[in-house]
Length: 215
Length: 202
Image (tube, rainbow over all chains, first blue to last red):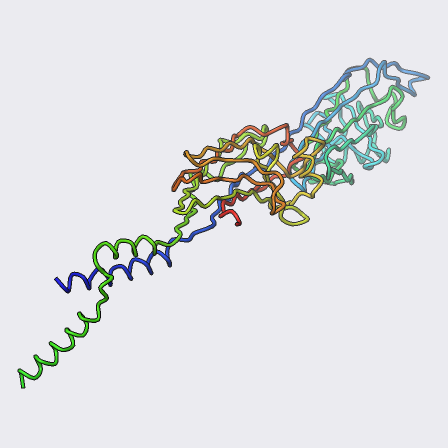
């Protein structure tokens, strides 16, 4: 009977010290995380992509019935990104690079797909630019860079001329943001050195495109 | 010899038993146990779903859920705060009177202007994305938004109201709040907000 009184005293002491040392957790947290993956989007739009041309002089000039234009809207969420503006045109042996000049004064070559000019990809534009080669059924026009409009707090686009493996073009170094690139070919944009009687009657075509991969 | 040892043992026990105060009668002992119970407070986070991947075209994710188990035996109140990282350091992660949580890009920290724009819907908010935030707590505990308080930090106060335990459930909806997500403007990367629950200061 006396020992049963003593035991609760010991237990009471143990319970008191146990409560005091173990039950104070006063702070905790949760880290909520979301991951935004890489994203980019390039959309091309145009108002006028075709024109009828009129010969002027003694087959020394060419005036387009209307100007041509192209707009590329680019969205990228990558803080360091690049896009390339390229052009290509078709000759007898396939598609070749069609943009030449510089990032501030580019030209674009239009050909009939039966053109006999060099099929070497980069020779086409180079030959036309220097006028060192005959350019049967190939005509050059000045491509106007009308505007490059970035939007976004950090968005910026820095152009440079890029010589790729198979294509030459304008490389734009971008920060994340939205961009609208506007290009046009004016009615009087003919590069006169590239036009003569070697260029026969018919339909001439070039394709302008923008992409992230270098060619 | 054996008899002597028995006598000594008998004396020791006699002293111990005799020394036991009369106050340790059964009723008194019960009273002493109650008075010795110490404050017991516990805050324990239980993560249900705290990570999600965002659809980069829309800014939508699948929703996030977190829970806190709160326990107190002395009517302790709690507070909940949200912390985001910015170029200027840690900042408050709540918006719209605590009904929205902002996330900031850990790889490309936003500046204060971007955070303010997201909070007030006043312009571009690069690298800040906000989502609706809802709370639920078991009764009798209650939640009260406190934009201004002694800690000068917007927060949710959680009053125990004599309750001893409750589960606090946090839900973050998946659709961006107020167009705070914009393709291209918000860089890729990991965005985060940290929600703390702590004991309210006395």
